[in-house]
Image 1: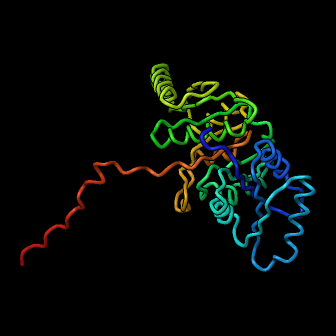
Image 2: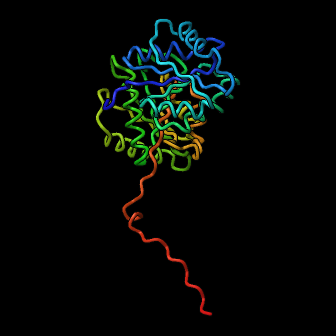
Length: 288
């Protein structure tokens, strides 16, 4: 791990009911020796007594946890990424413990908005990772940007396992079609070469290819392999509210049977040729 997780930001959605995120993220922070910042975003005009209620929520849900508490006015989708940048967090955590309509609606508004805007990896946590994930599934994108997501995701997953190394599996999904066996074999060779080109890991990275619809196959592999963590690239980054969260990432976030680590994809770099290309000249006006 090049940069250990020393600062974690966690969002608390409600102060009126137990928050299942707090015990999990508090355990993760304690295991890593990280500073935990707990953030509650509120609407204007309702600040009275909120600090005492946030302190009480922390005592009730994560007793004995030392944390820096923040009350911020505004939408959580904007304030949580802002706080992560302000405190130099390496990880932003939001909760996900329910698979019902309420959870799907929440993800469609708050958590998905946080993921879309965040400039740091976002852990959408569905279960305790205080002991670290045992099995990490990475959705592989073989582009240059995908390689950066792959490495950053592995770094964060490794940091979440201070006591050992998880099993790592890189999954590439390609479209099914004619010449199925040849298509699968070619995709396997490309994925093997891609993983060989990355930094070596203590346990190594398994390579797996599936044919079909990407989101469906990612969720199927996560379920069949009993993954504890799925790592996805999001296409986000600082100021990325203007970008759509990719359909594959959005579907996997909503349907994953385990926690999801959403890693912002770095912006596409301009090629030297494009940088040197002169601006197009306007067409000359016709002679009078």
